[in-house]
Image (cartoon, rainbow, N blue to C red; front, side, top):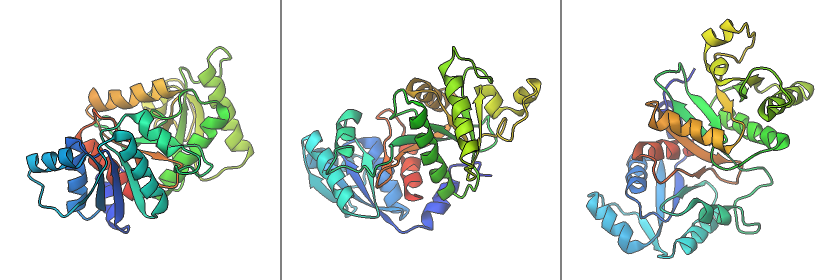
Length: 297
């Protein structure tokens, strides 16, 4: 059972050092995270963006003496495009979002001929270390897929399973969330959850344990599940929470981060390379742990 995000630092140190390609690196928290990862020999960074601004921030942070390559592209869209192009053409590399709008970078990532698509659906997985939960908790998808249909959610779940398998989980426990724990035709999330569960049972998919619909309390609290007489291998012990849509996922993830005292990390998966896609409001620690997480993939 993994209880702390710091566990992934040990795991990342067992993998080859990766190139970390930062799109629009002129951001203080991004640079602090990148330099810390560099100092710990997780990555070799290449910074794409406005050279003048990047060097100013490095000097401000008193970390200007490192021999880190900076490639000058003052225009954010061009910097994003060239960063994605580099990752596409160089294996063993990671893309990291810097001070660039999400939609600008995503357009470059999903571009047919020059982006990072592989035929799979891109999705976001966030990991949460909460003082109120007994282990690391995954949340998907609170950043990419807006209102996924059932077949999209199945792909999102498969991405998350593969991600957790690489972290050493043989059978991650997956709770497909809804407002209640029974299928109700008037509540779409419960209909989706029931059909997704049936899909995994019918197709005899054994690299996970999945249940749904489960309300949030039942998914993470044994006491709540017992009070409702829910018998499930997942209830009260979920590794991954699958949210109904981007609103639910985003609110849950950020609530745990900004109000719940949690430490978080997140990446986009399903592409040819893991993508560190943190919010501009995220802390240096969240950005640092997100890079570490990407290094494990």
